[in-house]
Image 1 (cartoon, rainbow, N blue to C red):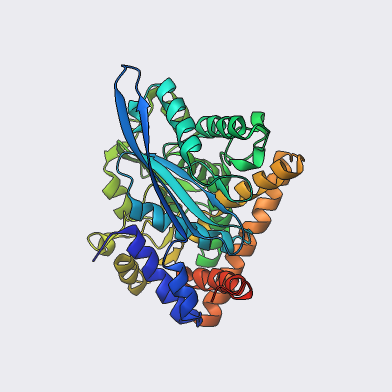
Image 2 (cartoon, rainbow, N blue to C red):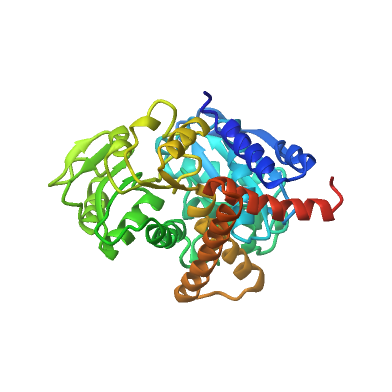
Length: 411
């Protein structure tokens, strides 16, 4: 079975379309991105040599509004990955009640091998060469390999080109340049809000065991919030591998350790395990918060968690999900669990367009409200249709997108 993320996304699209009785022409339209942009960025490096980088930007569908979000700087980035992410973002925005379509992009590059000056030049060049951009068309946000700093550079470059300020043209920028508070922790906080509801529905109490694969912006935030609430986080991992302690890991101290060392590896009082072993631990809850397709046909039968919360995009392949559901392992899908980042990006755009900036309490209140609505809508469709939560979430989203497509006269 394929682990191609775009094929995984298309499989879900067709399954949900059939289960939800969605017009086949709508499904056909969504299966092909509205725009695919591939462009090159020649750039002089610090050593004087010129390197040529390949960049992508994909617009899946904009029936609900302008496309947004993430931009990945990754050495192994592929066009199919970007196409899948754009489709997932289209669905995710609809699930979250956001008037926007799905966009995704990035550059094939290892940002860790760039100097700070090279990273700045490349970030600015991406925005400069991006064919279509702007607050009412395409709003790039951050993702793997990018940050608030890269987004600040992109915004500055866009405003230099246009000759006027336009804070809503780029997402995930710092509050100092008209971003929003709460942006950094938004996705992890959203995962936490969904986790509280999902734990309740699954009959899991404080003290249940949790494993988090990925200790970056999303996984680290989620792990800390669960730890603070009293849940026992027994394993976490990053790119260098995982750590395990049956008595639970002090996530607050681990955060300090990672700031000092740059990795969770060799954290005192823990046992070293692999990323694969983190996924296969016998725990109550597994939270994959790294990259796509980590749970696949090769390891699906080894997953021992009772409940999986997808904090990453597409961490479970179609074939693996069939195995997991047949084993009665509950899955809360990515388009619900990690929609918090997209929701706060929506808040950021609202603030940029209105020049009215919110405090953290307001961001958290409105984020929780949106997350709960997305989760409850998905649960309602799950019960009504008798489907998995993933198919239910997609049906809910497709009904909204389909209505917009039809009223526009596209099909």
